[in-house]
Image 1: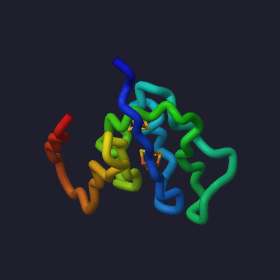
Image 2 (image 1 turned 90 degrees about the vertical axis):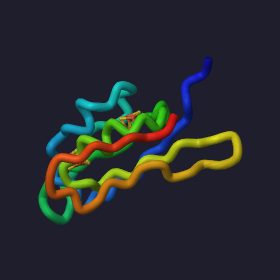
Image 3 (image 1 turned 135 degrees about the horizontal axis):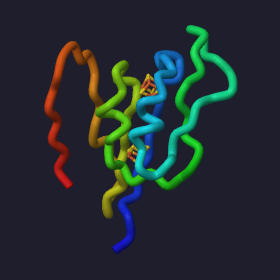
Length: 95
Ligand code: SF4
Ligand code: SF4
């Protein structure tokens, strides 16, 4: 069966360049930029179109700056946005 098709949107100006999302992505979609953002950090960038929308990157980002999209038969829809996280959370995403 073909892999699901996903996409991510990274708020690069809020990224602190910790690289956790890069390590968490099973598809090697994310790399770090060669230039810094306004805060002076190298930031996460999408480098391939092989995202499956698994949400790993958004779930591990300590600054909650990644939005994940997954295409369905009908349309591409937003399935996960994690914001204002102050402690440990559990998130379940319907497959
Ligand atoms: S949603 Fe999954 S596959 Fe897509 S960039 Fe994030 S970790 Fe990688
Ligand atoms: S986990 Fe979040 S803050 Fe860290 S590099 Fe990725 S997008 Fe930036």
